[in-house]
Each structure stands twice: as C-alpha cells, then as structure tokens.
Image (cartoon, rainbow, N blue to C red; front, side, top):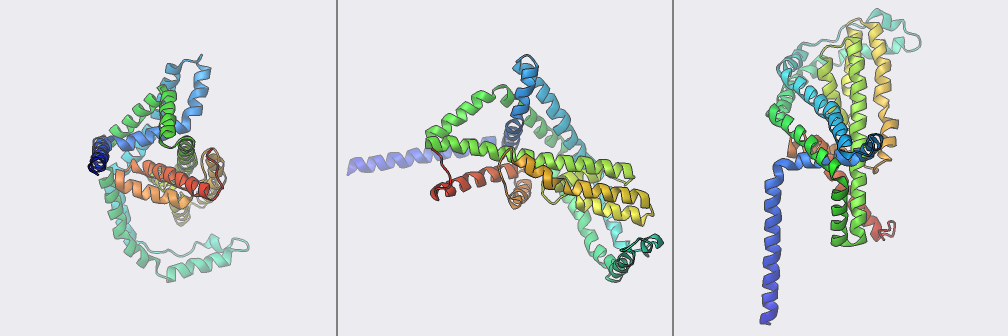
Length: 355
C-alpha cells in the first residue's frame, strides 16, 4: 500500500510540475503568441508559392526566402500599416464626421429619379417613405456611437509602434519558417505520432488544412474585395477613400462584407448629384460585393470548409484577446479547434478514417 501511495504522489507531483512548466512557458511566450500563430498561418498558406519560387531560382532556398520576405513586407505589413495608420491619424476627423450625422436630413428626391423606367415611381415612394420615417432621428441616435467606436478602435490599436513591431516580428518568424519548414513539419509530425499515433499525424494535417483555409478563403478574399472597393471609391471621387478602404478590409475580414461602406458611398454620390459616378460605383459595388460568393469557395477548397459564423466569432474574440493582430489569430485558432473536434466526432460515427 505504501508503494502505491508513493507512486500516486510521484505521479501527481510530476503532472503538477509539467503543468506549471507549460503554464510558465506560455506566460513568457504570451507577447509573441499572436505573431507566432500569424506567421505559421502565412507560412502554411504560402508554402507552395515559396517552393515554386525556389524552383525558379535554381533551387536556392535562401533566395526564395528573401523573395517571400520582401513580398510579405510589400503585400502584408505595408498595406496594413498604411490602413491602420490612416484610420488612427484621422480618428478625430472621422469622429467629427460621425457627430455631424445628427444634423443630417433626407433631401427631396431628385427629379431624374422619377424618370427612370419601370421602377422610377416606386423609388420615389420609397425615398419619401424613408424621409417620413425619420431617418434623421435614427442618425441622431447613431451619431454618438460613431465617435465612440473610432476612439475604441484607436485604443485597441494602442501604441502604433508596438503594432508595427508585431507585424515585423510576424515577417521575421515567417522567414524562419520558410528557411526551416521541413524540419518544423517533421517535428510536428513526430509530436503528433508520439502523442496519438496515426491519429496524431492526421490531426496535424487537418490543422494545416484549417490554417490554409482561413488564410486563403478569408484573408485573400477580404484583401481582394477591399482593394477593388478602394479603387472604385477613389475613381468615383468619394472622400476618405483610404480610410474607407481600411474599414472595408476590417469588415471583410469579419465576414460582414464591404457593402456597409460601398452602399452608403453610392447613396452619397447620388445625393451629391453625381449621377454618373454614382451609377458607376453602383455597378462596381455589385461586382465587389458579390465576388466573395465565388472567390471564397474556390480558395477554401484548397484548405478546409469552415463556417462563416466561426470566422466571425474568431475575429471578434481575437480582437478582444490579442488586440488588432487577433483579427487574424482568432479565426485560425478556432478553425483548427473546430476541424480537429469535427474529425474526432466523425471518427466515432465511422465517417472518418484516421488509420
């Protein structure tokens, strides 16, 4: 009995020691976790591209890593830096613009609207109905929250220099993963095999598919929609085009879409009597607002099929937990957890084969 008691004590102390060691390690690594997860996401999603570039550069891994690092700086860090910097630097101006909505009044419908064939009369009736419904009262109630939201965003961003360092750290870690990707993959596979045998290896592969699904299906789609939407806003002459483009990118990442920015912009152009540009932006909005319906499925097929609600929750929760970089980290973590949990449940039902 004494021997059994000693074994239990030793087991409890060993588990406690390991738990404390893991907890302390995570505590020390906490400032780097967001950048590390985002770097792994980027490296996993763009690994085929890196291998292709390496093949074109005489098989030189160092040259391929240098090219990929430069591409990340140009297409990831610099655009995000400019977008966030634009919003933060114009926070007071945007807040003032939001407050001015309290004095907004719906104007009379333009005369040309009634001359439109088929729908002209109906559009006039809807316009007048909105005006009578008291849109300005709604704007007055909404206006105080606009300034509060902008200031909250600026607070979440925190020190802009620290955020830039996070992005640069992400690029550095991604470069290290590009250079030592095979070794990292081998280590993860051995860890999965040691933890759960063939099931562990399969879980690692599923996690990689989930990461690639988020990176390709969510981030690339959001980037394409926001860039095209921003081009349309700039060409149409909508003010604060850079700020609105940054907002569109955040909304697209959160799976809300760019229409919350583009539709009011179209309405503003018509209200400002810029009928031609308004029509152009309306057509452009239809293209940009619907392109995710065919672009996202094509990209997600390269990774994993993920629920949009899961991505939305990951964006909001990641923003609260990790700050702005959590917009990207949150969906990745939840996508991996969802994929592994679904595979485990389906295995019990005989729908998945881990062997």
